[in-house]
Length: 267
Image (cartoon, rainbow, N blue to C red; front, side, top):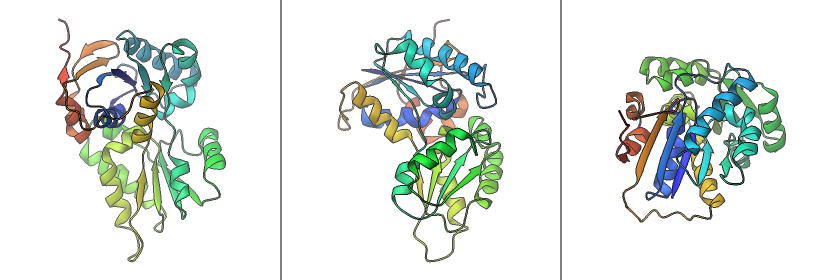
């Protein structure tokens, strides 16, 4: 079994690690676009062009499913990706986990990039899936970039700024960018420190686990968490065979993937 993931940068690590935990026997292909990142400020047509290039590079390795582990690409490029690759290659998009966050009741905050915050796309998701819950949209300028480059000081500043915009009585936080899942505990701590005493712990909602499970369902595969066979990791950086970037190894998800047998790039 082989599953591919695409993103502009290392935001795909969270979903890839989730697949790894569910199916440790699955080979993984990680196709990112360091030459073209970030995708967020690009026009929808540009995002689509770059996502298609990353997907084509991944598809050349003949995976059984392709995860679009990027909220921006899922918004703008998913129709084009599916038109080109399906039905031969199932394509699974990423959607912010607004529905499960709202299902628990109470106030919900959505942390997202400035381009996504307040966008018609996100407002539509809130309208369709928040089920009447009080929702606060929180822009997180600089957070995805700081995570991408493992900039600890930058992460702390961006998380603190977003936490200050998050209502103190919030019950759940939706992580609306895949990069944010790599620093989920830092986000939880920053939000929790501002909450009044006596409130229940804040709950974070990412997309990685649900996306990984959906990918397995699309190819009729079941979790096999008890298995520990060897599996191979292929890393593509703007189409070039490579190794995981050093920044990826700063995160637990990156270290989990780094322990796999990596396909050695040709020289």
